[in-house]
Image (cartoon, rainbow, N blue to C red; front, side):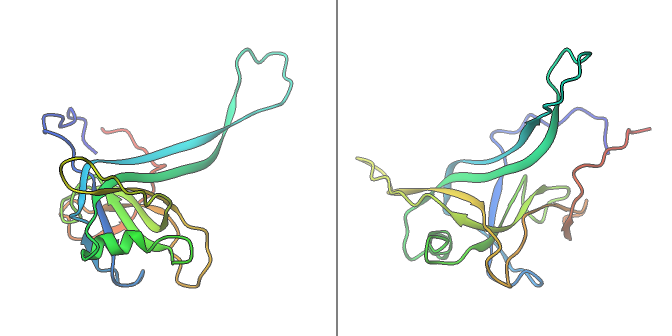
Length: 176
């Protein structure tokens, strides 16, 4: 862990979306290069209000709830591109598929994000007066409906960017 100021001098950000063409056990991560404009990852935890009636309590108190996770963005409409086909197939009647979003390339050190089976709940089409046709995407965790399902979990690359592992984001230890 570093106590140095965060590096905020970069132009833009580096969120990267990957799709898995392998299996959960032996993934083959492919960067979705058809994503354009902003890529957003929303991770909002439900706040469950305590309902006890303690007379000494002056403010509402909350317990942790479930996390609502979504990945939204926009991709160029290209029916021949594998990435477009992959995300478009994650629809009703299709299968959930494993994707991963990271704060940087999978080969860079200390990138973290989420990995798991998702479904795509927005396949709308935007046909602008000029420029390329695009599709918004809205990826949300899939329910466990098959033996090959991959549970959503936080992941992180090691400092050398040579390995990806599950990451316990609930831990914290102060720097010396």
